[in-house]
Image (cartoon, rainbow, N blue to C red; front, side, top):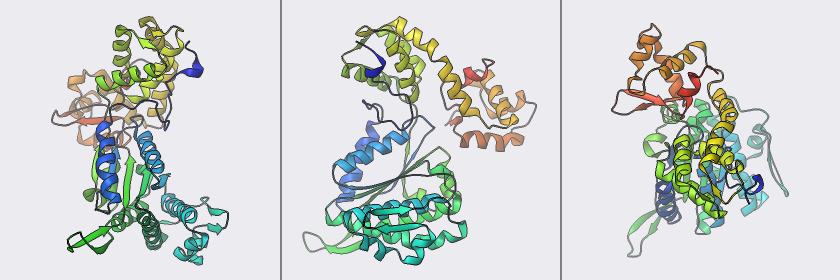
Amino acid sequence: MRDPANSPFTPGYGILPQVWAGREREFRDFDEVVVPRTRNRTYEQARVVTGNRGVGKTVFLAQLADEAGDADDLTVQVTARTGTHVVTELIGSLARVLHRTSAAAAVTDALDATLRRSIGLTVSSSGVRVDLGAAPPAKELPGLADPLARLLERVAREAADRGRMLLVTVDEAQNIDPAALEVLCHTLADVQNRHDRTRGPHGEAVRAYLPLGVYLAGLPSLPDRIRTSGSTFFERSLPLDFGLLRAPDVQAAIRGMLSNVEVGIEPEALDLLVDHVGGYPYFLHLYGKHAWTAGSSDVVTLSDVEAAIVEATTDLGRFYGERVRGLGDLAYDWLVAAARLPTTERTTGNVAAELGRTSSQLGSTVDALLGRGLIRHEPGRGRFSFAVPGLDRYLTSGR
């Protein structure tokens, strides 16, 4: 019997799904490359995960941390807020891991009293607390690079002693102030490059790198923000681009989630649902939730999905409204003009002509829309598309 309590669909952000689909390559990279090489103390690049909101970056990082934690690796997860908080938050998180794996004395050894006071970090037998009420001024950030590096190395060596790795994930990294981003990226790259001189099985000299695995995730603007911060981190890292899911992946996810609760779906219903999802993971759960509650049988029918499309209208209105909230008049008008053009004619020149402007006059507007993840370039085609399926329909619907 279908009811809201046993629905396998979980619309929201950062919620681990019951079934993964479409990210096999990235998970295989973690399982078969990052984990074994890092635990073996072989140098492995950091990963920079980029994609628009709702494509699964946050849940991907959470899944990696879950897998690492289940395997007794040490994990540190930070979500960046706007400004410079991320450096002190990472220091605090590392201090907590060190406190759990060693003792309070290890934290006090790694961070002197003056520094602990300056970042609002207190250590006791019961744990570590960090006062995040005020972010450090940008001018003080360079002074935090050394203690951050010391803690990273200390915790990574704790992991090495156990034959495990330290996994550090930073989500929403596009929010980080440029000065903090430079300190963060430079320090992560520096510690990843630290190593010990050892001997191999035949007596040859080898380098044993610290077992530090790093994942940064953010909007498509993140690589440019890293470059403009003055850090060479991105050039040393491996980019992972999270785009929309392919239709077969969406089909597999829907079938898998329904199969887990012994519910089927009509072929026509599946086709219609996949078409409206448009490869966007959040929509899979949004439409799926409404299709689930539209009926009670052990098969999701075409009429259930048709009802779901109607029921999702209010949710979608809020969703799209949040995406364009805060845009200036020119940026909003640019999007509306683009939405009114046929998909094959969506070029910056054509949009500029619709607005009675030149492309050069609208360059900063286009850059801002790309940075917010509302549009994306289509490589090799000279045009762009809307990054979120259905946004063009919303903009021209008169809502």
